[in-house]
Image 1 (cartoon, each protein chain N blue to C red):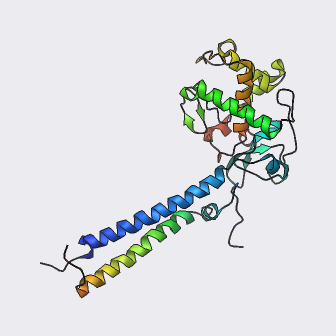
Image 2: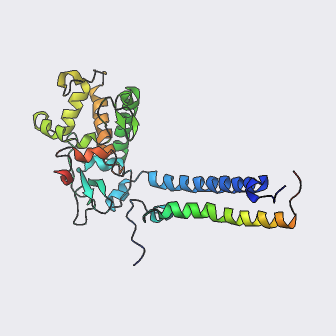
Image 3: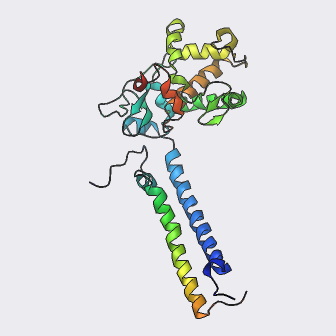
Length: 55
Length: 224
């Protein structure tokens, strides 16, 4: 089985996610960084189309 | 003027900051609820049903408490009432605490509550550390109940708990280190309650904290 049984005292979603090496860290960073990449390309597209209003 | 870059755009950084702050806030809320479930104190029923809890019910003072290396978790864990073949607590072996091993949940809770109040009133944390809070002028008390030194004193006092209670009522008379603990005027009743609190605290699963406790010779099997 690729998912190890939970070894924590009180098991939860987070404790399961925390069992692998850096799995919790990587998941949380992905959650934050991936949408930022989308925000980057979205802004780039708007800039190229001239959709950005003057500040 | 060159081509405008996204990296120098206010909008990009504002949107990113909003996203990061929003996600972090939601995460903190979720993790707070997770911590709350981890910190929930167990009940006497949990002990009866052999359900492990980080913070066991106060009735844990009726049981024998041990501290063993868990290969699975990579640090020492409290073993309550004997250990089974898999290295888990059995919640079976009892141990007399001041002559009794049948404290009800209410009695045990009142006892450790008085112990907690005494620990707060006497400012133990001015010198000692409890569960990561306090000072390191005097020994860490988180696992003090399991300190093997008390086992050597136990026979002379009729039990570990009596030795600890006697010490607490007049520490200079039983000084074990050059750095003596002062007499804080702890009464007999308070001393019993403090010892109950210390026993209860040693049964709390602290993820192996304090880390150096396992290295005390004789404290746990793993380092012998």
